[in-house]
Image 1 (cartoon, one colour):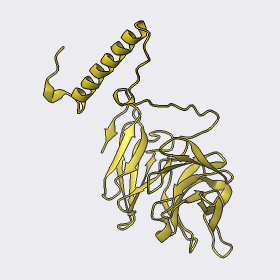
Image 2 (cartoon, rainbow, N blue to C red):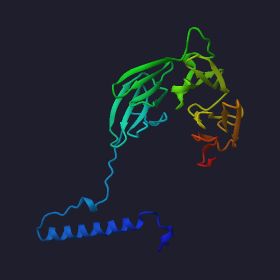
Image 3 (cartoon, rainbow, N blue to C red):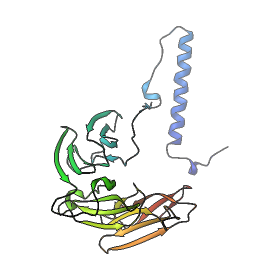
Image 4 (cartoon, helix red, strand yellow):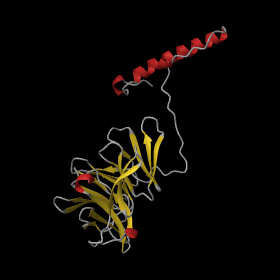
Length: 269
């Protein structure tokens, strides 16, 4: 079947040329083998080789991964450790023994990573493997609507260094309640009454937070995407039917726009 040139993918012609050249090299090598000559290898004409590495016994996708600002390292929260991988080689370069990790997000400084547990946020430097600073989630002087054992998940926004606010999902009265917690004042604000654990995301330059919620306690689980505008103090929602619940929701980093994926693979914007 002939394919119109306008429909060909970029680089199709170049790949065809490389394949022909590779065949010529292989044919020449076969001729030399028959004549008892030296093997012919030409790295410039062969395809790029990809090395696949199998990692067993580690959870690398249970939590959202974070990439450093220079794109050289990938930070992963895995059980009771934070693992740092070199983006170029895929090799693990650091392993931080932190205790049970709820979130790990890279900071703005070189080697900085914020690690969340049920009791505090620690600023680590994975290059020196040292804790630089710690922020307690609770204070004796302030009252909170939840205790550390209630905490199910934590989301650390990119603006944490300036806002000192995080989003905490806590189990209260059989519901997964989302709170905004300021670590300077330790004041809490309830955002959503019942959400899907792990679905929280922040966007629109830090102005909006979204999560997947439910229509009713007994039905309509994960059938609504909730968006809270922190400037307007208003909640917006996007619904689906019970047969196609939402699985993921993400906000645009700079605009008030949300995209959500559902069980059958649709992406709604």
